Image 1 (tube, one colour):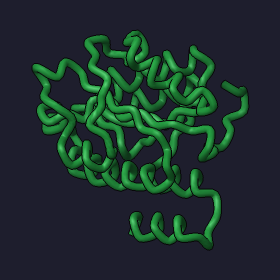
Image 2 (cartoon, helix red, strand yellow):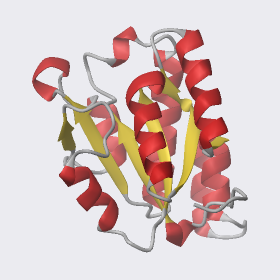
Image 3 (cartoon, one colour):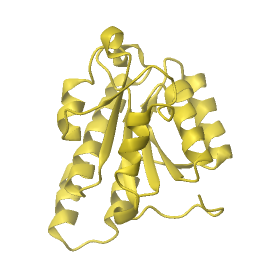
Image 4 (cartoon, helix red, strand yellow):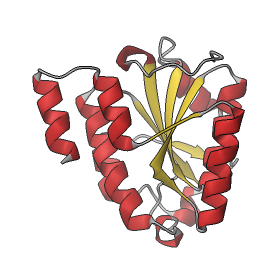
Length: 186
């Protein structure tokens, strides 16, 4: 992780969607907005060919990743976890290391103050650049979400939004990819 937050680069970034599961999402404060923004983000990441790792917390109890988001992520694969942070799970670390040139991690999911926060702190400790997609994270309460975002930013994570992240990863206009992303965010 650099001292000065750097920009995301398409070839050096991967994404992690944390625990966007059928039985967990309905309890979130901003569930409808988060679903919409996360769907848009995931579809954009597919266009940009950014690898996405999906995690599920205690699938037996919380169900699978919501079907719409699983489809948008373009994968049926997921990392099963019981720990709140994704980092203790060997399968998660293997997924990150499958793309060793991609040391920046775009992070989003639920709950902001539990699994997203703890994963972000562990990723920062592992010397990765971490970008939190603020409109694609949520908690049951607004105060938990807001405090967690402030804590992650203070620890060195960079806050962004889904649309901003997609255009930052895109980098320039004038291509078919730009036109696809532009249609997606409108």
